[in-house]
Image (tube, rainbow, N blue to C red; front, side, top):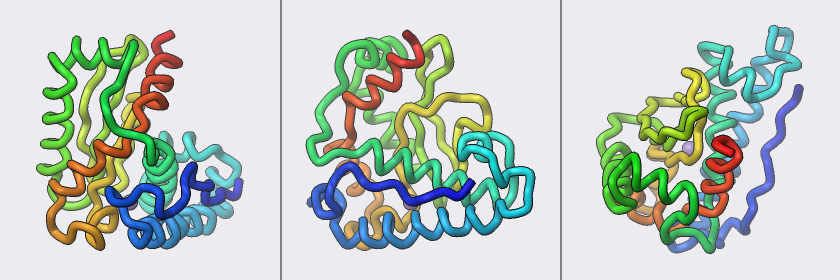
Length: 196
Ligand code: MN
């Protein structure tokens, strides 16, 4: 299977001021595209040549995993952002957040802290299990919770390439901005689809 860079569900300047058009040009146009190209090159002639991206993320290791997971992670990340995002979640996922993290404010603090304290490059994830129990997971480099059997609901990219042009070394400022563009209705739909 040959993978393609998916279209963004917004124009490249529409996440400003949280994320600049220039950052999207590099992060989506260069980094994300390169992971797609490298994955397509690396899987040729391997057992993963005709596998779905999700299967590759679950079952591969090494450089195939690193590149394929970065494709999956960026598809999921860019697809979870919206110029009309931010605010607080509603309905079922809101109640689950209150149950598992005491309050949305506390959840937001814990998730932000997980991003600020992740050493080096990686991703912070909100995950669920089949029963709907929520958790926050830090993953280094290309790490993806699917690889360890968890179900991703939301992710934040804390690689420097996600924020350096806009915020330089100030990762916490990027994390504050992330909360203004997260598409809660979409994340709530993902949760409801899994938990019924
Ligand atoms: Mn990235």
